[in-house]
Length: 317
Image (cartoon, rainbow, N blue to C red; front, side, top):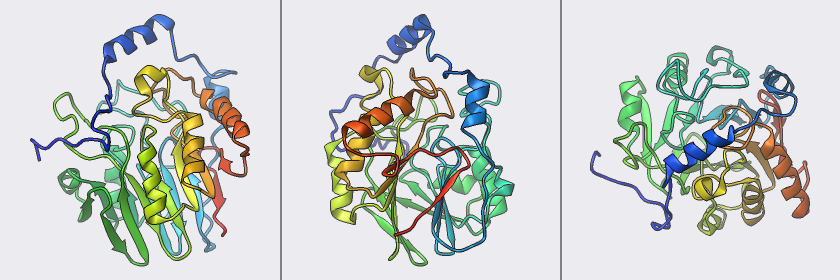
């Protein structure tokens, strides 16, 4: 694996150049600014304790950042589970969770399927993954190419490593690995040695799309043309400023709305905001930008859901 490097659909997309310029400008400007009303009030407003009612019926929960829990039939699927105090290899430094995780692994229902989009620390969190594997020894993990060994080292028995457009079945689910425009690294020495992706989970009742981290690319429209338009899409809206640096790796709210429109998504769920400060936008800035982008495109809160961390919505056809 060590010598393989992965590329985006458009190999000319430059990502992550001039990191030092960004860091320096950010430092000088003293950003990101706190959310309006301050951090404590924001955390109180945007977090609830999740309820996991036993009644059947498809449902989606947002557990903060890119962690989504999906109930489809009798199965529970979780994406990029990150319930730790920091998104970092260290407990004392690195991006700090500014809204406490709404649940612990011990409080979650049985998890059957785990989906990982890529190996950045805010998406692949070793303590959360280990806790999930201990609590759910039969859990099946779906990971992009290059990550299988990482999971096996942490005790995962059932790991499927997929490349873009590959699919695998689990009970009545079809699980498809789909492209994303991003990059990967867990250290200074392993850049792009593992793949990054989105995921589509389908059965006869539901088509769910989880984008992972992605910049905007018109090529993402192929997801809907190959696999059908999603009933529900978890789309990122945060960590998008400054555009000169983030544009190629993270969509901004107008681009998230553009993806919602181009993929003809029935309902989108806003994720990847309000949890960690990873870029120049403040915790609440994506909300204002999303609302005006929706309005401009003739969509509303019924089309693109903004919910609290720990909150859920039923998925009805």
